[in-house]
Amino acid sequence: MPIDEATKLGRGVWLPQPELVNIYGAIIGDETRIGAFVEIQRGARIGALCKIQSHTFIPEGVIIEDEVFIGHNVTFINDIWPVATNEQGILLGAHDWELRETRVKRKASIGSGATILPVTIGQGALVGAGSVVTRDVADYAIVAGNPARFISDIRERRIAAATTRET
Image (cartoon, rainbow, N blue to C red; front, side, top):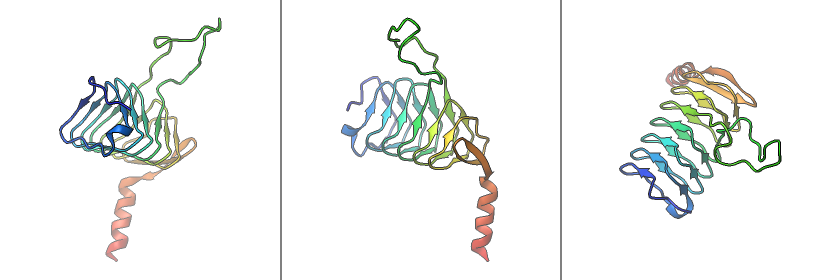
């Protein structure tokens, strides 16, 4: 599996098994770590200090800002009406569909097995493992389920956890 020469790897990008990733034409920020069996397609952008766990699929149109965690087997979707052929039964080509963008903002975390449709995931947000995200996620929100629904604000959970540890 290649890392093609159109890919721009930042300083200190860590690929522990580069022969087991497929990255072509993407931009990867400094000190990002990418696990095995990850595919990152042309036009995707990954920020600095991110962790992309194994078996993740990041297509064109996905922008991941700095310090984001992507769990194992996360799938991003960039086409909300996928079809193989047109009404005449002719196989569709690369320009016969509408690219929809996804943005994952700084310090967000996405749990393993999540499926992310074209949305914005807010700064510091947490997406639970196995969730299907069909709508934008607010900054610092915790969402989970299918479809993913708001559970709590992560800042409130962290304050509660810190208070419990102190007592």
